[in-house]
Image (cartoon, rainbow, N blue to C red):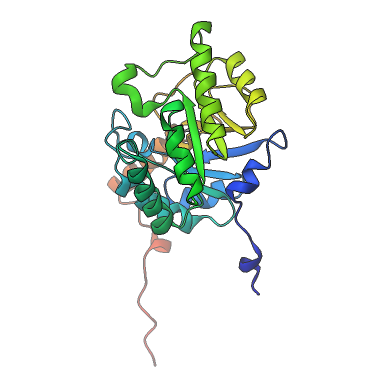
Length: 275
Ligand code: KIV
């Protein structure tokens, strides 16, 4: 057996068992090269539908299609070998019926080889979550700010900052957990509420703009690397790749214009002639 064969990917069950334990580390990735790096440090790689905004420059995640998710999910699977790869179900691929959701989820699992899918919504998708889980689809929930609902909620603002909203958001978390989700993303929710939900539900919570008390954390990779021009308040930039890439591109452009690139070491000399 090769060393490769001995490396086992984390599963949804492994993640679920981490409730209250060692924090779960999650980042997004949409391509093979970044997946290879992220895989070395993270428990979950999320192929988020944020790829529509990050990779394609869309204003929202609404136009993202199932085919886009499958293409990038496949790339991330090829680039990784240890983390649980979880692929987002895009807007329009699961809301019409439980059956539509199952057909979409089955395509994602079969065509990418990933280990789980993620679905936005609380009480309104709980029945669908149960339907999928009973049929062998591991589901990660996503409550609080749900960006696919931008056209009805109107803005990407934090949720639960007014106590009168708490019961609704707590109901969402409970409904998804009881329906069988193996974990729940809590996005942009007032810290005390995110903390309370994390203590109340029996499955791991993964925070993004939520609370350090969550069982794990997720960020969009390009945001934390400093590549995204605008980021929400909850993003910590761990480096500033944007300016570094700008400097590298400027140096390349200057060398091309000065005929300093390619240099002798970057071109192929002729083979030595045989005597
Ligand atoms: O699409 C995405 O990247 C996400 C994370 C922000 C949780 O859903």
